[in-house]
Amino acid sequence: MAEAKNMIEIHDLNKYFGDVHVLKDINLTVKEGEKLVIIGPSGSGKSTLIRCVNYLEEPTSGSIKIDGTELTKKNHLEMARKYSSMVFQQFNLYPNMTVLGNLTLAPIKLQKKSKEEATKTALEALRRVGLEAKAGEYPQNLSGGQQQRVAIARALCTRQPIILFDEPTSALDPEMVQEVLNVMVELAQENITMMCVTHEMGFAREVADRVIFVEDGQIIEEGTPEHFFTNPSSERTKLFLSKILR
Image (cartoon, rainbow, N blue to C red; front, side, top):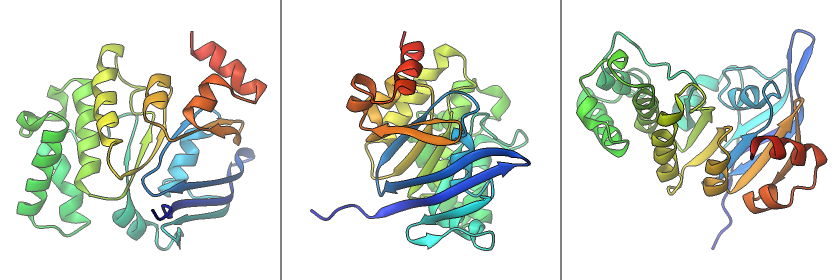
């Protein structure tokens, strides 16, 4: 069986916000179909890292390649259209559009799909997240968990091979977290490349092929979930897990 190709390659990535050095010489490769979970304390640079992969933040230096092509200021919109979609903390749904309108907007406007094709894909995506009956609703009429499931369905509608998750459950009430995680667990069974910033350790254990721990803009430790949660080598990782796994 052939080894999976490199889908995301990050080399010597640095990011500054003014004088603040947020990412420091990050080197990371993510294989096609791999599920990578990124954990670490707040302010460690996790979200900035994932936003650089989608060029929502422009790297200060270093390079990011997606499927062998370097991501640049000139080509980042085309690359995002072709390869990746993102699920944010705050859902980012358009309140003046129905659920169906939110899901068909990008395929029609950016990918030039017909309304019929976009609608068919959207309904299929809503079915997968258990919300087909909500197609005609507006976001404000949905719970937080339902809105985030719609956001995941929106990411599925573009049919791109990479989905980036930036703490997708952090804005949810505790009882709504599991319904979103269930959808993500189901997605993880497919050959989608996933990078997920999260504090949900149970999800990381169940879904991740690899976990990385980021602190102060650097990758402190990486390994399989089994290594990471049962025998981490870094004292800083051990301290973090001792506080979060109570």
